[in-house]
Length: 100
Image (cartoon, rainbow, N blue to C red):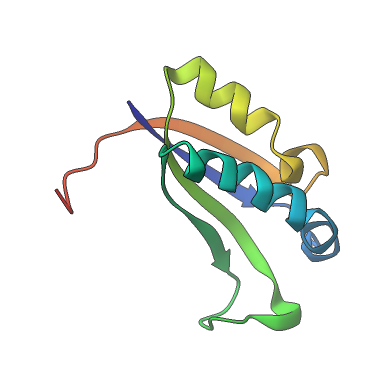
């Protein structure tokens, strides 16, 4: 089943995001290589592809996991979560309707 991992950044998270980004992306690539990643990306703090020093307000990952607990365990071990980038992380079941 698919799960949405919806993360909200804490204030002043940009330095932690920058230093932890390579490890975060590596984990996402592992999901992608396994054919389980649907989409992933950050929410810019401003309406721009490159928000610069404005940074980000959070992230969204939609991926396939064996169950809710597996998705939660994966989210809890994310380098961004471990580095304190996120103030809050929600993991929810997700049903993809489109594109089919």
